[in-house]
Image: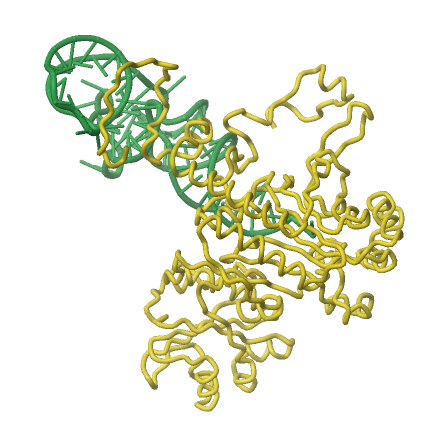
Length: 500
RNA sequence: GCGGGUGUAGCUCAAUUGGUUAGAGCGCCGGCCUGUCACGCCGGAGGUUGAGAGUUCAAGUCUCUUCACUCGCGCCA
């Protein structure tokens, strides 16, 4: 007992089992990750992980109970599913009965839950495992758990409301209080003000467009940028003159590695003294405009990027995030939860030279933008929404297309051939023809939600048996080779040499 | 696929400019002590310095290759 105030007088002692010497002490947390993962069952005994696993359970239970109370039905969908090679790489499972054919593990139950809507299920949810064979990050595991939900005859508002309900319930279960209604920001505003579609609003540092104030200067970079329809964006860093040369250089490196040509600085040394490469190019009037628009005062620094908006905003966004680290702007007790809405429907893939879906190809275009699909795809907004927590994308959803003609228009723009469409999604298009109701939904990453609620730095802390960055399991040593007989039954041959 | 960090005893770490037999704490083993509660005392075992190659009279230390863990970029509809 931690207090040491209770003394136990034993009357007998029976040893049920004895333990080998543990490879590491269990009363601290100092070991390297590989040791801990190899003996995960010992690591899991420690309070740090015990708490996380318990909290995760409570969060999932609260969400499940909430959705149940709202009339949602939990329905399981197959794990052995069909490969639809758009999007993330699939994990494949060979079929013994149909040699040479493969199941795919689901990246999400997207199509099946939509088919449940066609099937007359009004309200569906599932706490389900999803699989994506992509490279890992601290916040990305190859298999992860979603709280997946879908509602028929629902619009965006219905989904946001239900989500605020069950996410709120889950967070409350983890001891986190959030507003009943989460603040919203459009994708456009998020990009223009914070340079990210998942801005961390635990700190401010928003951008100001100063293009108008520097339209007429002799500064070549500005003129070239503006002539090419670019923008001059700045972020004011209060007290930023305390940044060291080294720190400012690092911010410049981040801007450049994000595609910007450089990062201009203006130091507000005193009331009438600025230090900047720009001082000799700008008039007093122009400076006054900038001072007023940014609100910069003595001790501040302005960081400026001139480029196309598509480059300037995200680059400055990366600078913004680094600034938060450098200046320690984030209060770890804060919890920022926001909706980001109105994502663009399409993004242009420069490599493949074609339009791709920003969210997924079943996302409904904004009703006002449907006429723009073929003429100006870049201007089409979607009925989609992300839930962003502390700068992480926690959930993502959309209103779906429930009309097979509209769905085919989208596929056409994505340059999917008739044959491809039929092979991959034929069953789905067909289903939409049988009176599919309007429907909408969302999926939230339970692992990430738990990680954020528990303020852990890695998903590994909220998953009982996580994988390493190379997607291996150090405890079981998966993945491993299989024996000849297994391959033979599947009529598979290994083409690569051992060790790869 | 690419860039950064780490890798020395079971665990956490140290080892000056390349220089004697690679050390310490904890743990482990043996003994002593027996009102302990991070017990204490005495003694002991334990290392291919992740692996391989190279430079050198001499490599934990320098160079190259490679592996593992990790953070990020690409990737993640």
